[in-house]
Amino acid sequence: MTYILSFIIAFGVAAIVGQVLIPLLRRLKAGQSIRTDGPTWHMSKQGTPTMGGVMFILATGAAAVVAGREELMAGNYNHLYVFLFALVFGVIGMIDDFQKLRHHANEGLTAAQKFLLQLAAAIAFTVLMREQGYLTPNLFVPFFNVTIPLPWVVYMVFAAFVMVGTVNAVNITDGIDGLATGVTIPVALFYMAVAGWFGKNDLAILGAALAGGLAAFLIYNFHPAKVFMGDTGSLFLGGMVCGMAFALDIPLVIPIIGLIYVAEVLSDIIQVAYFKKTHGKRFFRMAPLHHHLEMGGWSETKLFCVFSGATLLLCCLGFLGVMYRYPM
Image 1 (cartoon, helix red, strand yellow):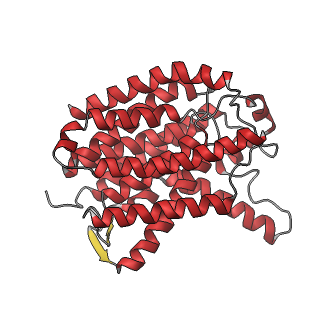
Image 2: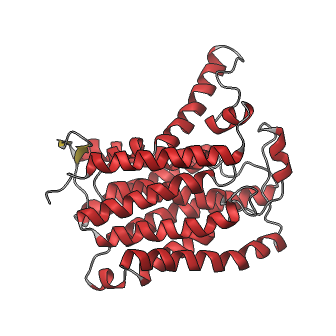
């Protein structure tokens, strides 16, 4: 029942905030600058308000505190740590968005600046979770029900790599109307279900809150989008996706439930590497993957439905892979 309450609170807060935030962003002229090297038909989206991720960030936080009040009173702060971790990434994204708006371009912070900030956040979170006893250096392998013990130093390097990689993969997925939103809703529900199955109610409440906030945001973000989440939202989502996985001690499930994220970032890497190696030839029509499919005739609505539906199936598969992580 608490999960349902968390979902409803987050949905309501995000829906209400959206009614105020979107007109405010328009008045502030916080319009998205569209990349000139993207699909030409995306230029019609120029000026659409960005930084809409504030909606589900506020909604997730509000629901996690209100619906999770009993957990906080009992001294369970795991979900709060995960939210604050994701919030740090959201702030990094907000700084990036502000820089883009300030310069009226699609380039904000440099790649090096974002990497260092994200790396610092990942290391700080890993250390905090370790000190609070929420994290072990034992990697659980989905489906095989075995754990691989690692030295803490090795685990820290692994964690930082996965966290930064996941955050940027989610960021890349946010390239067309509603895509990152639609793909992440099943992931949030997966975390809610797994946390509930494991008896970690605080994290289940957080997963439900994220799902509720995103469901309301989708009202404004579905094609044709009235608002974009911006890096503010996409980096926050990336932080939630990896933060929840590590808090539940199942980080190796990310490539399963987040296969769409992985495919998106790999397509970008392959495109750049192939372009350099062949001195100008392209492996994909356009990277990342969603643009390649767009160039092949897929509509934004079809991409949303296929990618979101595929992620839902992958999340069901992922649940089967980790359901025996802890003895019942």
